[in-house]
Length: 304
Image 1 (cartoon, rainbow, N blue to C red):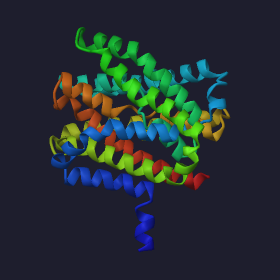
Image 2: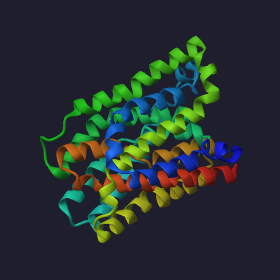
Image 3: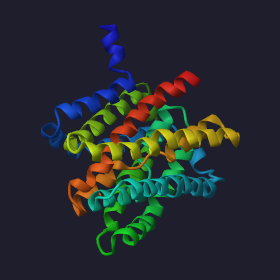
């Protein structure tokens, strides 16, 4: 019983279980859990942000530098590589649209909580992600219009997501700290974060289950791109931060910022504007991104 208890508290087991159940149980259950995605992500963001004191949050001397670096990592470096590889490997116009949208979406909201879980610089991640989401209001419609045409993107949707997943959680985290509730919740924070991610990941994989049992050639091509932008790019960024003598905490956050996209947001936009086929790239990349998070859990624990 003790082993089973430890197993169900293990982050890596929980994430892999979410993928397996998403692929096996699939859409019937995922449809029911879909409405929980945004509330659970907001909960995870709130709990992760309590790791930052109000004093730290109000003395942000390096905010412009952090935001600029985050934009370069996620949009210029990662987004650019996505577009280059997709142009080289993908001939299908729907799949190409999927990669264009994927390249323009901001970092995954999970960058902040995973920075906390992996021992990264949570403040760096929070500032960088907030700046990236604000910049997305300009970057997303501009780049998507350039590559796909004009008149099909509503920035109001992004504003709503920004409020639900960034602004409100920051405010709520200040309330938890001010009232002292954060200390009471802290012993359970890791468990809440892990199982919230379980529901979110299970739902995303389950809703897009058909993407993994279709055309083998398409699956392989997208998988190659997914591996490059997650595993390969992440290790390149880590190598560069070591060469530049960046501290370990900031290095972890930079690796996450430069190798994680908001696959859920990308899938939502693609399903709404282009249909299910265009959402295949973001679905497959999401699974490889999750597998990499599991790998990073072992990787950074081994190095620490």
